[in-house]
Image 1 (cartoon, one colour):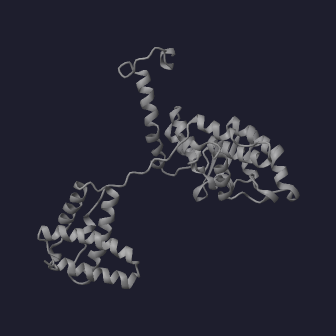
Image 2 (cartoon, helix red, strand yellow):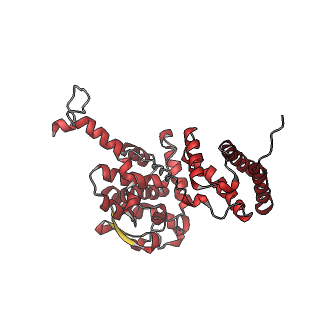
Image 3 (cartoon, one colour):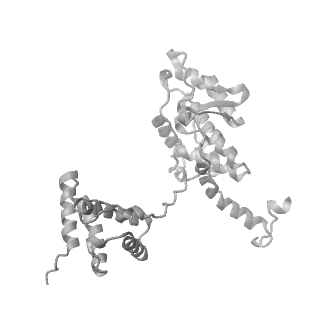
Length: 315
């Protein structure tokens, strides 16, 4: 028996035709919209909701039904986006006077936690670099600085020689919005920079002799973000467990290790150059696993049985 076409079916067909004509969408995109909207239409038909009767309450119930079927926030947002397109067509056709989805607020999607390296991973990555070559000396200095000072990749590759105050062990970093901040340099980064400036950079400069850039490619040209990414991937490839590493991983690791070792969140915010502390707070989530380990190891009501004394016992 042939299914009877409903007012919703007719409106959806008209909406999809408009999408194809006005936006020139591909057939698979049209089919994706059609699938979402047919699902919504079935919900409305079951509840005997006519297009003119659509309101925010009914849309909320539909979204709740999606959640009950096991669809997550990402899928719910996709269905709602498809529905908003249909509603714009309904308004243009005079079926609705206002957009009921304006009142619909979905939960914010959870921010993905950035991957971090352990301190042992950092050591393995640095040790993989061949420092017998000038490029290796440069890359070692860059990695030490990226991890040791938490620089963004864009800040790292655009550092000028004048921004480095090696005797004072600080950098003058030009961050987002041209905001300048002073960043300390650790002893390992300082040693790597000294070696690079003495034995690596002069060879890379060759005939150019001088360059205003701190980290240079051959001929004194500034190193690009892509070149640093390629170099990092090359050294990370020495250990299959580090193949996923990206330049920003070093910055994430800097922030996480600072917090795990007792740094104040405001201090980490300042070092990272974050305008808003809410951006820095993501790293407090990364430290939770570390805090749980400390708690289980040190609190008498949480400790697992062990034969050897822990660091907490020794304190």
